[in-house]
Structure formats: structure tokens, C-alpha cells
Amino acid sequence: MRRLRRPVAPAILVENEGRWTAAYLAKRADNPRAKPDSRHYRHREIVDALASMSFHKCFYCEQALGERSEVDHYVEVSEAPERAFAWPNLYLACFECNRRKAPNSQRSAAECLDPCEPTQDPAEHLTFEDEIIRARSASERGLATIQKYLLDREDLNYKRLVQLKHFLHALDRIRQIHERESRRGMSAPEAELLAAFAAPDHPFSLMFRVLLERSGFEDSRGLD
Image (cartoon, rainbow, N blue to C red; front, side, top):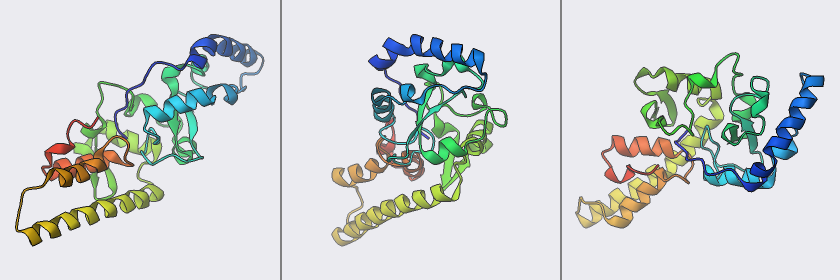
């Protein structure tokens, strides 16, 4: 998870949110278990805006999104039906994070990190031991986030490990060049290569931001 900046709502939502919401609430009055029309909040303009906002990654786990991406309601519709089409309540998640996350009745989103909250930096609450995610300094919010979205699940550990191996391979090549050329300072292209792993559009960028900062690599800063 990394901090995200939410842009203005797409035009399709600005134009239709009120009508869609009113129709859904009326439908829900007759049937409290009714679901909102997913064709509305999954409109291509909305999905594209969310994907662009998250650099085509899951808002929660940061894995690259494919065809299995899903629009998620940050606060569940059962809890806040009036927010079924509210732009600040629409997130983009991978299938696993959306379908396997703990319900608010078990772990409230209010207890967790919100990647869209500008006052919260996930890097202050989450850290990594190799590919394994941990709560930084026993952060309760960090731990709650890991638990709600199952960010320590086995499939994510494996995917983070694959990316970590790419990073270590690049780092090893740089070290070999330094040994061959008998130099210690890192060139601009070398620094850029490593910093790219922590760039916003790279999968699991927070893991690499933590790794680079732990190594004293200054260029990893300011990548939000």
C-alpha cells in the first residue's frame, strides 16, 4: 500500500451519481438486501480513472492489476448505502484483496490505513523483512491493515519475492561493475535504475522504498 492522490470525479459520475443513488435507495427501501447496479460504478470512465490514480495497481496490496480488477466500496454498501456511488468511496482492488478482505463488522476500515488519506503515510506504519510485510514499530493501524486485507497472504509473499529477486539481481550487477572499475560512487544511471523500483508505478513500490531508505539510498525519497 502506498499513499494515493484522488483526482476529480469522472464526468459520468458527476452527471449521474445523484440519480443512481436515488434509484438505489428507493430499490433498497423495498428490499434491504438489494445491491447497487455494478454496471454504474464499473463504468469504463470510472474504472479508468481509478486505475490511472493507482498506477494500474491494487489500492491495497500494490500488485499490478489485470483483468481481475474490481471496484471496491471502501465503506461497505451494507453499512453506507448512500455512498454506493460516491467517488471518495470507490477504490480499485485486485480480486483477492476485494473478495478476501475482512468485513467491517470484523475489522473496521476506520482502524486501517486509507491509501487516499493525505495525512496518512503507509510507510510510517508498514515495513518489510525481505518480502514479508510487518507493522512498523508495532503500529496498531499497520497491523489492522495487514489483517483486514490479508496483505501477508502466501500469494503476495511469492509475488513480492519475485520482484525482490529482480532488484537484488540489478544491485548485484552494479556491485560487479564497481568492483571491475574500482569505484564506490553510484553513477546517475545506476541510481535511477534502483530508484525505479520504488517509483509509484512499480509493483510493491513501498517495499522497495523501505528497502532503499534502510540502505541509506537518498534517491528513494519523495517518490509519492
